[in-house]
Length: 249
Image (cartoon, rainbow, N blue to C red):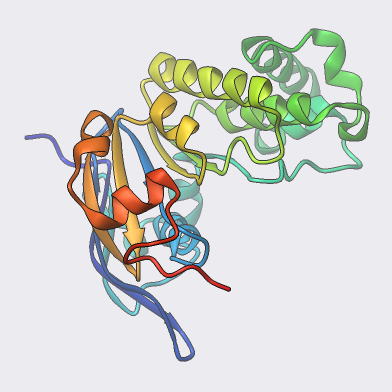
């Protein structure tokens, strides 16, 4: 059996009196696309930050390639990751190509970085002339594609997707979902996504984990999700007000 690419073992994290993670156990295999679902404030973002080493658990372990993230050199660990942020998080004052090649600028020449950026922009369906535009000149869908190009620019082993279709219309959301799936398969990378969008879940997931009340309530193949028999999963994926998940009023 291969070593999990990402593994969380009984991870706990509190902020003051707020116990966000209460014993998260999660395993993500190499080249697997794992999607974490759950309501707002359930700890999805803290889970990703724990894997990135940006949040230190109060208890438990987070392993990448079988090694505790606390034992990795920070830069070596971060070089393994790519990230598509929820709001795009592009630098407004930088041209598109500078955004895409931002991490490569520390080790490559300006010309090499621009060529790299154009190559990655082509891969996400954007024309070379887009490289010299500013983010504000692009539509929301194009900005999301630029974010995708940046996420894959360093050919990372692991990519995180934070609500990848937020703010997009249904057609553009479908385009981005297809792109994500294609890129994950093409790069043979491991993906971890957090989303509320069940259409995205069904498009990009190999496996799904339901996070609620600081623990993983259910995990399994995406094809088993509709027949999970888990009340948390059933309520969430069907958008029902009644169930074990209390609506915040």
